[in-house]
Length: 556
Image (cartoon, rainbow, N blue to C red; front, side, top):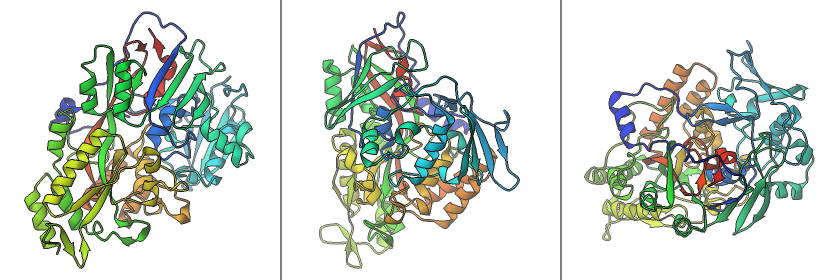
């Protein structure tokens, strides 16, 4: 995800000092075919690419089988996958309509087949758009809802006609759905697809055993001769990162993915383990629920007060967390977009100052009781933090917060849940979707495969992106933050292809988020994956999931 962006000298030097360095693939003699690579990973809720709300969790698995017209390169730029090129105005594949719309012509690579042998065609592109717009289980329709139609003049050409400009058009159709399999499919067929999605990738999902594993086997119809090298990838479900590390050390698995900085430092000492790392556009976040849980129209009794949120920011020792728990391998967070062409220069959050936190709470009318916990108008400053179970680093961070926030008069309790419960869909009662939290400790920032901030910011912070019954839970505005000015800024950014203008608009959006203290950006996250030395061919891509180049993996 990295485009050139002129950062101030001091910030650039800091990023260079703190950010992990991209690790090239381990090299050896010519790859030998065959074998199985086993990955320790958390169980995904679904493998349907458009139902997914826990994008990182689900995409690591389905991405080995499911491809789209586009992907993202390690430098953060879009790369053509099933398309022959990325459409642009310069190459004539993007045309702006004087009436305010646009057309985007995608040309498919010839000779591509689905893993069941059926030819891929432009009809699959059109079907994907229609499925996204009509299936109530789709997590978000952002961007696709701007499309008026998709013309298919021949099998290799899809002309996408937009009613309005979509500046993030090059990130759409990052997964394609098979028309021949899903057109007219009943609920049972859709459920089956969600557990074993058919794709055009190097592998095909052949088995999903809940609470145990997913098996992906070589796709005999893959378009690249001689790829993939290995026969299969086996995703073994584990309950925690600690379990994954134990299995990696014992040689029971070949890789443990998406590790913390502290995990990476620990595993670097293992002689049979190699660490792959890259800078990431993600940030570890404490997201505040601004509405009463379960009632988006009513302010949260405690966190609805911006003075409380700002006081909690002052009471959060970000620098100490980075130094002691992450061994100084990153930097305290400053923004929801830490890197990339749209990352704002000079944006920051207030530093740790517990005395100022206490003064702010007292000035806002929150009075300490006999037990030290503050109340206002009969409401006790008692809130819950929710994260994933089995993540020791997050548990350590939570304990720091319990102690530090209590010291300023806020009672914080911990209620962690399994990842599938946290990131589940609206229909399954996912904690994020339903707003069943006060503070959410999780990863934010551009997710795997995202190269353009428009889609991300619109899904995260527009008023109409608040998940609710009326929109079937679509959207990812988990904080229930609604600011008409932010909607206006994002609408304007979405109507222009002028990069400098968009950068300025996003900077104002991100500044507003900081001003309203919608979240605390704890620290910028790197990408760390650990592999046994017998595995080779992997390449770190901080802008995509670990399995982005799984066709190149092999065993020594």
